[in-house]
Length: 78
Length: 219
Image (cartoon, rainbow over all chains, first blue to last red; front, side):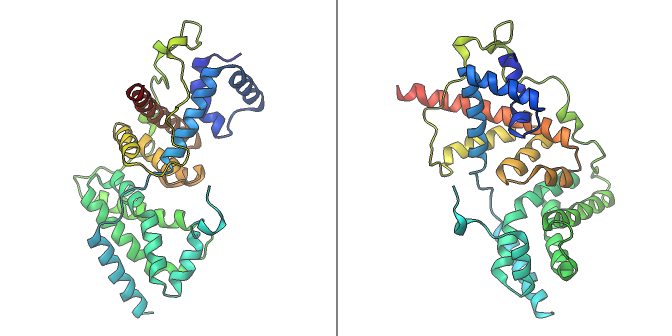
C-alpha cells in the first residue's frame, strides 16, 4: 500500500496518465479507501480547473494598433 | 462544459482566414498567444520591453512567412520557433543579456520538495487526522473567473521559480498539451512533469489556505 505522503507526490503522474498500470491500480485502491487522499486529488483537479478559468492580461492598446497596421500593410501588398 | 458552437476556432482555421485577409482572425490569433510569447521571449532577453519588441517582430515575420507555412508542424510550434530564434539572436547581440543555456530549467526541477508539509503526516506517512485535506465546501461549481480567486492564483504563480511558473501557465492556464510545452521550452517530458507537479502543488496549497479561511469566516 502506498502511504498518503507518497500519494501526494504521485498525483501529477496519475493525472498525466504516466503511472505504470500496477502503480495506477495501487494508487486508485488507496484513493478509494482514504478520504484524505480522495479529497486531496479532488482539490488538485479543482486547482487545474480554476487555473484554466483565468484569463491572462490582454494585449496593450499600442501593440494592438501597431499590429493591426502591420496587418493592413501586409494585406495591401499581397 | 463547452458545447460544440462555443469551441474556439483552431489555429489552422484562423491561419486560413488570415490568408484570405480576415483581420478579426488575425486579432484572435494574436490574442491567443500574445501574453505567452512575451513571457517566453523574456526568459531569453530578461527585459519585458525587449520581449514585447521581439513579440511584435515575430508577428510581422509570421505575416510575411504565412504563405510558406504549410502546416507540417503545428502553427504553435512554428510561431514559437520564430519567436525563440529571434529572442536568442537578440539576447546574444546585446551583451547585458544572458541567453538561456541548455538545461536552464533543471534547477527548478531538482532539490528537496514536499507537495504537502511533512508536519501534516504521522510517522509512517499517513495523514495526521487533524490536518487531513477536506472537501472545499465553497468551491464554485459554475466558477467564472472571480477576481478574488484569480488574485490568489496569480499571487501563488508569482512566488514560483521561472520554469515552474511557465510550465503551469502553458499547461493549465493556456491549456497546451505536454508535447508542445516541451518543444517550446526545450525541456524533457520528465522535467516538465516535475515542474508541473511542483507548481500545481504550490497553487493547490494557496487555494487550500484560501478556502479554509473562507469556511472559518462564514461559520
